[in-house]
Structures are given as C-alpha cells and as structure tokens.
Image (cartoon, rainbow, N blue to C red; front, top):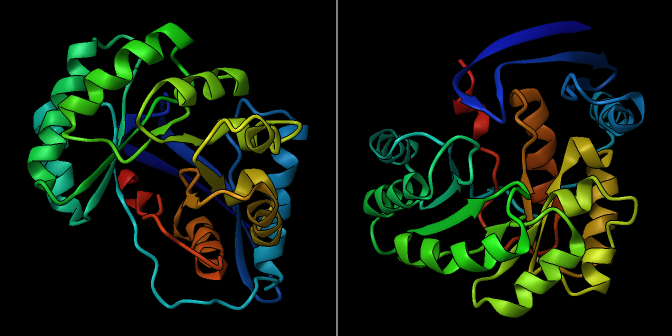
Length: 260
C-alpha cells in the first residue's frame, strides 16, 4: 500500500492537493482516492473499484484505442486557450459556473476554447449541478453561442427532475453525472428521460464491471470520465471505455495533466 499527495496545477473542484492510496494485489495496483469529505458509505464503492483492479478482474477489451478530451478548469481565457492547444485533443470539456466568477468569465473561456480548437472541434461544458432551473434555461443558449455550438451540457442542475425539465426545453443535449453516481437509484435518469448521455466514473460506481452493468441497463450513450485520479485510477476508466460495446464520445480520461 502506498499513500500519495500530489499538488494540482490549478485549483480544481475546490482542491489544491489530490490525495489517495494505491493498493497492491495479485494482479497489480488499484487506486482508492475518495475525497476527504466523503463518509464511509460513499467511499466504500471506491474501495471496491481498487480491489477489483488489484485483483485483475477487468473484462477483456473490445478496442485498443480510447479517444479523450482535454479538461479546462475555470481559468481565464488566455490560460484556457493554452491548455487546449497543449492538450492536442479535438474535444474540450470546460468547467463553468465557478462560484465567485461571472457569466462573462464563462463566455470568454468558451470563446477562447473554440478559437483554440477551430471549427471542427467539439466543446462540452460541466456545471456540476450548480444552476437552478431558471438559470440553466437562460444560460445554456448563451453559452451555446459563445462556444460556437455545444456537444452537450453536463449536469446543469442538481436534481433529476430539473435535468428532465432542462432537456425538454433546450436544443442542446444533456448529460447526467452526479444524478447517476450519487443517486440511490441511478436509473431515474432513464425513467424520467432526463439525459441524452450518461457520464460514468469507475471509482464512485464501484468498479469496471459495476459500470458495465449500469451502462447496459441505463440505455444511454456513455462517456467515461475520471474522478481526478492518478494514472493508476485512470487505468480502470480506460478498461471500462475499452470494454463498452459502443463508445460514441471522447472520454474524460486525460486528467493526469491537472496534477503536478
């Protein structure tokens, strides 16, 4: 077992240092890195994921490459442009609605990202459930224009009911993240027709095989994303992405660049 503590290049998700544990098993290493504020019940699936990886219990891959997106934190426009250029990806996921920042900051960041990608690139935004319904309905069209077209909006509001209402009202596809990984019943997203895309994170959902079951049952296109892990944890995300029957979107698995 090894404990790690790595500084972040940019403050992200409210943290400046990423901490976790690497667990060694008969087949190699797994990562257990729940965020410090999580209680035992929330952290337990993360441990199952690490144990699965260390035991070598991943399914066989169906593909040998996985497309990825660059992740752009809530930085200024100049820095956002540089991150996208350095990332070399054709898809960018951009954080918006950062507490303490203005709507104009989000718009400038998206304009810079579009400039860096060019007209053929894809831009998606992640709100982390921070908008209420009225704000989501007002902001999505504005940010869609600023980005020169959005691939999708990830978790614009906190509740599944709000996601469903947003999806009915806007022309941009909606992706569900927290409404799946933090939900007692992740399938309410399916039942309420609240999303066009399911974002699956392997550690919070209990491992690669658990995610494959969710992907099959939820009946939505899947984007595999990291939970801000090291390369050890991201390997589990790659294993999931490689094992999915279909992979129509770039995955959020290039986040090691956020760590020093």
